[in-house]
Image (cartoon, rainbow, N blue to C red):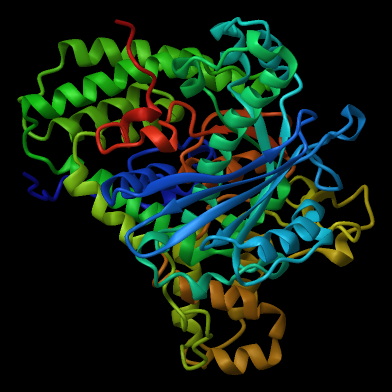
Length: 561
């Protein structure tokens, strides 16, 4: 039962939208991977493998089909014999261990022939509106050969070695939404199963994980023959699909303010609803205690060599000790127990620990939380139009709402504008360069909303409060993108990062993690301040064993018996 109280409020954008907090978000019930598997299980989707034509060298193709109540989708996977020297996670790579597309329906032989000519080329090829995604993956150098050799000799791999990496392959890109000829988002968004964000990409990765398991076992059989054994199911379930993500993803958070607002706003609404629960029944507290214990196991397995992330993991481990002790003695019969626990965390835990707790308190309440997933897509079509009839005074008020903190910064100081975002000519990918060390200022992209808001606000001060902003923009068209963003904040209050994205100490990995946490990623492992590795679907059931009973809490490791 929830009863909103005046003392319980939704956390404001000024608190939530700081990069330090966005870079500490964790997966939750609303994450896109969990949303997908709940639907697949609830609607009793059926999975088949109509083709697995891969030879002893690991070259060939396979097809995995997911059949739902109304439609089917098929992952078409191509396996390649890639020399070690050509294996690279960089976007400039032109060959991979495996390449994929998610086909709308079930491909026939002509489709396969066409895809065989294009999918392995990735950007250099072209797919059609029959395809919904394009992706590629590389083997883990540390784990692939080891697992193949162990299985080929009749042995199971050591779980400690497995956990050090967590995946046999990692994707280096999963493209959708119209890229390289694939179907546009608007052509499929009216399908119930694909309406929530990134369901195409999550389904592609889920089926990719099954292909990787089949392929590693196939290669072990090719090497060991009758001696080879299959990977133990409990070990296989620990493995996910890795992902290597760089700066190309960071601008997404800035360039999609309405969509990102919907994600954050839905999560904040879920947190608010649970904090408004008057009393927690025994079943709810038991679920929470269980997820807390299992999260402790997950964090214990989380490793990174990046100094910032290492400190955050250490702080989180300490937080979990404090939180577990607090929960052991906590009286959940007190009024508004979750709100009280969150208030305690705000003063006792690191931001990393606070955000993990925020995710955990959602676990016992699917009825309050899960329906909010339907609010996370961007269905607007007109909000990007500038309202020229708005007065200068009203626009200034909107700018102050999101960017007042930025108006007092000295934007001429080198540390406040040290970086510049631009697009590389070679690969047309976003890059972040040093403004005063590289000749890139002329190519800067509009990815510094705070600076631009400060400049626009300064220019607006010269105009009468009652003037129409259309007149202002006729004289200052360079501020059009900022005025548009200001007006968007009326419908997207959580759409703006409230930090300086071009400062000397900005960490782009915070933006990467914010997005990836909504995917449902775990074990974030930054390799620098500009790219990060993660693991997806680790612990999840495979398609053939997916059921309503195991479709959701798989994200948390099982407790030792």
